[in-house]
Amino acid sequence: MTNMGRDIESRLQELESRLAFQDDLIESLNETVVRLDRELARLELRVKSQGDKLRDLGETGAMPGSSPEHEVPPHY
Image 1: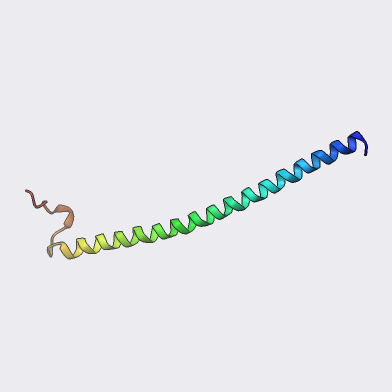
Image 2 (image 1 turned 90 degrees about the horizontal axis):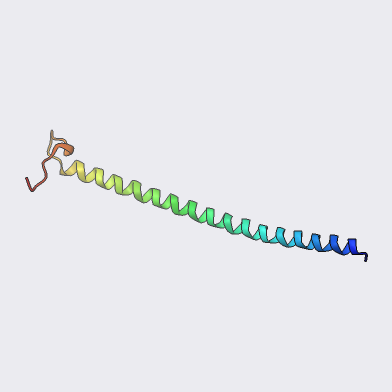
């Protein structure tokens, strides 16, 4: 094999190695994105659930005809 042929083969091997590394990295990043998307969806459900609970507590704890935003705290 000529010197030029060896140089081309070496460069080709380097490119193939980089491509394999990039494929692995892309797959790893994709798995991370999928995991974080699931976690975000789960957290959004928890936040919504907590907001619903707070709203329900505000509705059941308020006096009829009064607004919970205008109630005086118990220490006054």
